[in-house]
Amino acid sequence: MNRIEIVQGDITRQEVDAIVNAANESLLGGSGVDGAIHHAAGPELLAECRTLGGCPTGQARITKGYALPAKYVIHTVGPVWRGGVSGEVDLLAACYWSSLMLAVRHGCDSVAFPAISCGVYGYPLEAAARVSIGAVRDHMATNRAPGLIRWVLFGPETFEAWEKAFAEASDG
Image (tube, rainbow, N blue to C red; front, top):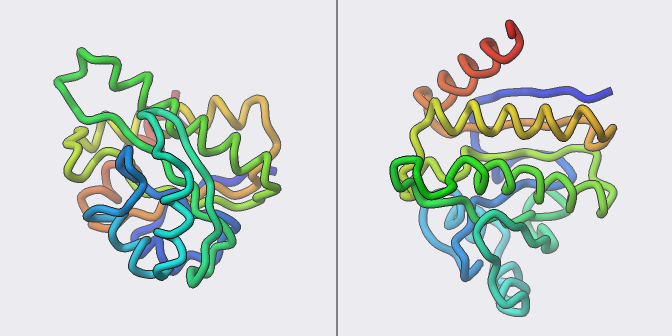
């Protein structure tokens, strides 16, 4: 049975099969969630990421979790917000779909997501929340795994945007 959870917290401390990293195309670390995940996982994560050759926007790659409680890190590259006229919605949905398909292929029954593209990439919180919840629900309509999908959101404003979008999606 699929479950969705929305919590406020630190994604690097989640005891799940995989955490998703809101990465940049190089996969070599950055700021925000990306920097926190690289820091918590240790230098082995960067070493493995160097072997991957980057990742295009909307796609995902998987590595070991190293010092993280999660077995895997799924790195996905979200779109930079350009006013919604450059395919951002489809690219953001593709991040969730690609990440979930990698999780399924690697036997993950639990996955934790951050708010992809909502930091320095500037995606508006409410719009990102609606896209992410829609993409996950689309995945869940045709896939039994992962059994647990959790958003781990850092601040109260982000948490509230996801809670609101989830409530609206549940009413509709």
